[in-house]
Image 1 (spheres, rainbow, N blue to C red):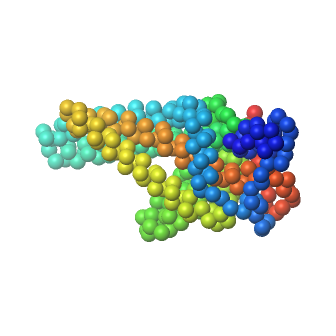
Image 2: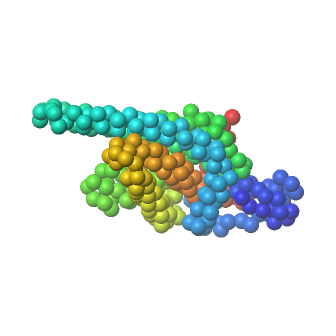
Image 3: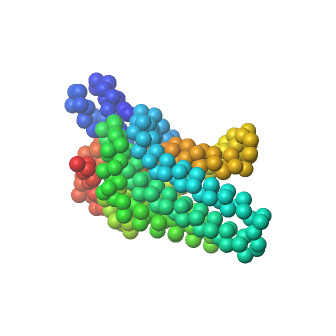
Length: 308
């Protein structure tokens, strides 16, 4: 949030007119010098994370309530997958080699199938998180209803973009590490741009690459990747450590690990999605709302209207 320099009223980040005194003279962000659609001259990573924490801390109930739906589904399917695997493994010592191979293939197929279902559902729900973040940035508050409005508006676009990006980045990482990291650097803002601007997949990917090149977001992307890895390691370590305190370590670990994975996802996905959206909004929507820029600038698109 920010304060009006005239009367001190607290305003949302995206507001350019004070609701109390009507003041329009907010301290402007740095103006860019070229004719690209991103009109801010620089982006401060610390500012992005500060706004991210502020948005999440003041609206955590709405964000957690919305994201808890795919998380609970993931935990339940994780329980089922691990329980089925545990039952199959228990029969292995008495089975012959062909039966062992068949059981292992069933376990693998079950785990991959359920993981794919969870991944698809979570991808679709991410669009709602972007919409909720946009609403907080512009009005100072949001609700679970907003998440579902954006979820219903862009499900196929978000899903298609997520699948395409996952395939491209995975191929780049498998063939050689550098192309995969480069693809991630270019296209990590694709889904926020798709939801905020209402663009198609290819146009959103192109805009994401332009945005990354314009602001050199490599440092921001690397920080997010490090946070992701750190949280995943922490979640795995906590699951193993606490499971070791329960009699029947192997069984306890199989049953408790989905819970810890869900807790990590509940916090991590919210923070990462909010950070990506805020970083884009700070350059794109925030500056165009705070400054009276010429909308005839080549490549400029006005902010998308709110969903009714």
